[in-house]
Image (cartoon, rainbow, N blue to C red; front, top):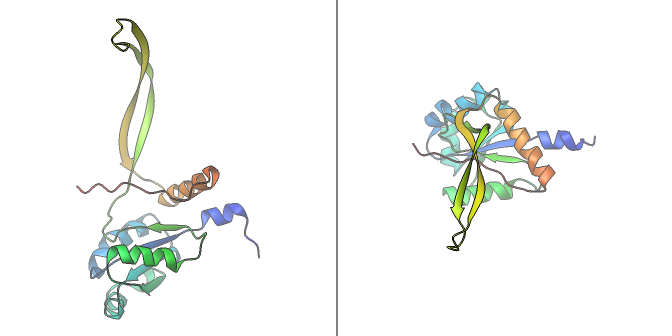
Amino acid sequence: NIKTEKETHNNYTIVIPSYNRPDLIQVKTLALLHKHNIPAHRITIFVANQEQYDLYKAKVPAWLYNNLVIGVIGLRNQRNFIMDYYPEGVHIVQMDDDIDKIMELIIEPNSSSRKGSRKDSGKGSRKSIRVSKSTRRIRPIIDLDGFIKQAFNICHQKNIFLWGWYRDWE
């Protein structure tokens, strides 16, 4: 059964490295993913050792995720472990375990623009420049699944292999 290119682009796995926060992951990241109707079969939680595995297995309801994997200790080491865990070509979305919202930046160009001028290298002449204005606002992402699929589709169209989002540490 050969998958079409579009089907391949639309498949992704959400991975969440977590350490000693089985309660927090439920009320933050897993709750957010559930709110956005991300199916549990897409979600894998990576923990550091058998002790953490047992803790998460006991405290995090199995219907919230697909797989619980014992990785390694240390966030940087765990992220590297995750990248090596999956075969090349798998679309991976790594998320922290304490995410409670995801916002998107909306840039709307305004039709108005103003002409400005500036001096040219001290020669006394002036060049006219056009400064375009835009309105920028943020809003919660409405369709997280669609956003992720679109990000991977853009990557394939542009022949790039990595995308991400900015974490605001409010």
